[in-house]
Length: 197
Image (cartoon, helix red, strand yellow):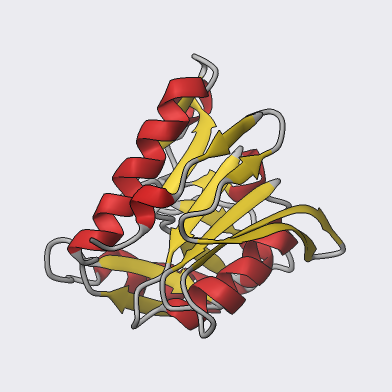
């Protein structure tokens, strides 16, 4: 992995450098995600089949209507400096030119058009709380949480309009119900394929 070159505010100093060094040197099994969440290096196991199927279905829907200058990425590092973090979302929609010019190993969260996390049983709290707060504080415009393990049943929650480090909930639907993505997407997602067989 390449070195992380992100300006973090406030300057976490040597502790951040040490954390990044640990992150870079973590030798996790293939398919695992190694992230920095709230200044702590975390390793998540590879996602299960349904998790990957949902990511695939969502990517297909997004590819159909996205502008040509945007790409959809599954292993892109995203910097969340205000929370001392480096996340690897399940899907990222970002300008292709920005991705191609990135040499630091990650993009600023605020430069991404859409960030998507699909919960796994082992990391649902990170996606619901830590990452939602980190993305909001970083100014990421849209965050889609696909929560397979929500207490009231599987849901999709779209967060947006970050202000003072907090998102506004734009929409929440159950799996199987349509979800409208606002401009610049301007499309309705059919989530019926997210339901388990």
